[in-house]
Length: 383
Ligand SMILES: Cc1ncc(COP(=O)(O)O)c(C=O)c1O
Image (tube, rainbow, N blue to C red; front, side, top):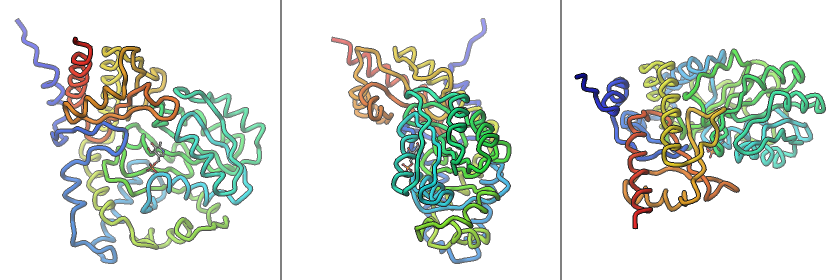
């Protein structure tokens, strides 16, 4: 008789290049910071105006460009992801300019808020939460708004767990509104799914530290295309810190206009090294496996998975069945096992759970999490 190894053992054996660490943080950011990354971040003896650091700075930029297939080096900014979104828009548009944006969740909405704060004219292409606008919606919006200066979208809309089909949107923008800068917020998708800046012709790509880059919050990374630099050089930016022209030259020389997020960069170098050690293909494949596993397990617990059409490989969400209060469940989960998962935002507050599976998370870790979730549900329903 053939004896089958337990699933957990099989899963653990498949991911031998990853550090086996206990993970309790399953939120869609901040995420678990691996020990070897922490060790690099905690270097207290490094100064940013030294040749040693400048070498690491340039090497980190090179690795990042390689990962996202960008012909230009990225800029590092000491701010959270929203700062990166604001910098991208502010440097691409002048006050009064119109731009289109995808609004199908909490982070899509944010483009509109940033646009208003900057005195721009935001025009939303909307879809209900849990969905993405269609290619045709984008085409129609382009036809009626030919003068737009930018198009902004999330890749993963973290609030709904949907991965927007940017590979369908961007060619429409290029053909209909070629002057528009294409700005993609890949804050919660980057590293979890293949993404090529060159192939998709993304003008500005935005990433942030605390998601699948497995770092503490406080670093935004922007890749900027050659043509976006031309636009930026000719845009009047009413900001000192976010005037990206001030960063262009120093950052091309391994330095920065202002004090850089030094320790984040040390950590990012290690994170990128880890990704290349596992191999970007295996890294994204593992995230897809986590997504499939999380969808299956949520369904077994009676949840209705938010999207089967376009699920993000970084985060999975589901609507709770009538007899489960998702926020009470989350609370109990943390009390009993220490695991943390996220709830819903705005209208979805108290209706859903969201489980982040970014970074070094494997289905093996998710197995532990779902076992605990199952126990919490059983203990709540038992008399
Ligand atoms: C897709 C997306 N965009 C933007 C943000 C905002 O980033 P931050 O909170 O770092 O400002 C987040 C954060 O959760 C996000 O998930």
